[in-house]
Amino acid sequence: MHRRPSQATTPRRRGLHATSATAAAAVALVTLVSCGGSSSPQAEPVSDGTHDGGQAMAGADQSSTAGPDWAVPVAASVSPSVVSITVRAGSSGDEGSGFVYDGKGDIITNNHVVAAVATENGQITITFASGAHRPGTIVGRDPVTDIAVVHVKGSDLPPPLHLGDSSSLQVGEAVVAIGSPLGLNGTVTTGIISALDRPVTTQPPDSNTPAIFQAIQTDAAVNPGNSGGPLVDDHSRVIGINSAIASLQGGASGQGQPGSIGLGFAIPINQADSIAQQLVTTGKATHPELGVGVITISKAIADRIPGARPGALVQVVRSGGPAAKAGLKQGDIITKVDKTAIDSAGALIRAVRSHNVGDTVQVTYFRDGKHTTLPVTLGELPAPSG
Image (cartoon, rainbow, N blue to C red):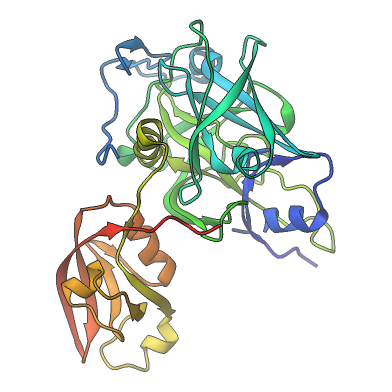
């Protein structure tokens, strides 16, 4: 009898007393779980070898790294700037990873790695590759994208990592994941980009609003404790932040610790960088919204409506919101945003969140037997409820 795949989880390593229910839920796309123990509206990729005040970047080798040992120089240049993050809050704790983001002592990681400190009285400890320990403080967190920035003091920090351009990635490219799975600091694994724009939804521990993103999928081994660590290309550039894994449910009861089955998911660095810049600047991040409440119209249902296609059925249009101003109405079926086909409510949310507040998008919808496209200027999503 085979085991049914469960849902995407954030590879995160909780404290010694994590309940089996929590473990099962975390393991739940086969189970998507977080892997933590884990605006600058159009952020541009750094290409000149500097970031934040001109500090030299770690790695960023621009030459080709073809050959059987291509990962050796990548690991050597990137690893010193990757950190292990330990969180203690009350009687529990989390472990995850992160990396030096700028020359001011800011470290980027996943929100689910450090969220407990924000809701309970706790502390964050940053461990560098050298073995040095520093206390960390939260600069800002964003449950909507699962990104957080933590600050450490000191003038002798490792250099920030060079950021790549996640919009130019291709399936099959070689990648390296670096982090602290199961507390094993500085672990390096290799693989390829298995897929792009993979829809992933995880549930933050401190919010009722799910984190939804179009992920980079990789077969590089990612395990609990890898959350927040970098996924880098063969030029030592960060292209994503390892955040979730798909895991098979463990045991007949669905209990067990999630682990790598070759399905890891990373938040694209262009999105993460945009959010991190906002967190560093203002302590919070903004997100776009269409101003509608929707449900999925499946193919089976759409086939019963002459001319309709699968999409997101508008059930509620917020008065005065972007959709209302543009002319969308209750009962419309949204089937496309710009060139992105919309076949579900989740697909619409992901498509909208891939933009910035104030962007104008072309929304295609079905009404009264006709497909129509109109421009909608996106508004700002209200802060998520706890």
